[in-house]
Length: 112
Length: 112
DNA sequence: TTTATACATAGAAGATAGTCAATATGTTGT
DNA sequence: ACAACATATTGACTATCTTCTATGTATAAA
Image (cartoon, rainbow over all chains, first blue to last red; front, side):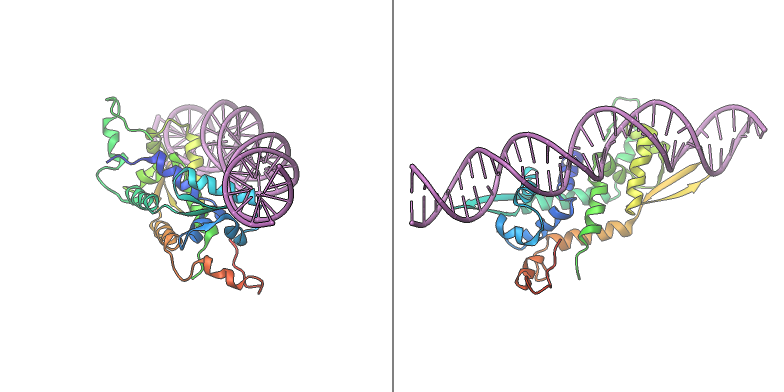
């Protein structure tokens, strides 16, 4: 199976920020609303909301409204995808792109 | 053990780029010099060199000179750190930061 | 010593990202 | 309808990132 580098790197980029990886960690225990999350950070509410929006955009978290509150929680399916993605990336194997170079010039090149 | 969010997010940021995650994947099979790597990308040599420099700066890859060539390879120790880091981040547990909120106001706050 | 090859560094342009203040939207209670 | 609260969006500022061209450095060969 082909590795989806575009999707994988988008998810990585979403969590590759000290604030957002920390948000993700806190949410890994339980869902939480923004005002609760804010207790952990020295950031304004719009900034935190922006970070949550980015995590949601790539599917790392989901949100659920309950009255005035928006509860955010981890999307375990995406975490599972990420784990599998990184396994594929780091595991040396016969499907690695490094084997495709023999086909160069034949029009079958796989480029990143 | 405390999670090192700063270190973890630096490594994540290094690989959170389509080009660099692809470099890492190709190197996962075997070490390679820059001119060989360049066959896989439509990028100039300085650009590729810059990406390799970023990966090396956070320890994801190491380099070794042999004559005119610089051979880059994966640093498996850092891959192992990353795996453990992500496990800690995503695993709900008693050491999660979400449990530290009870100590707020006591000067024992753990902030991200 | 000169020339060629492999790679790194410097500097700049354009794009993207993190943050905030201000404001808008949505919900609840009076 | 209005006020209060929770969250999202907008616009602006600054910083960082990706990429390039131009140039520098190191090694090997002639």
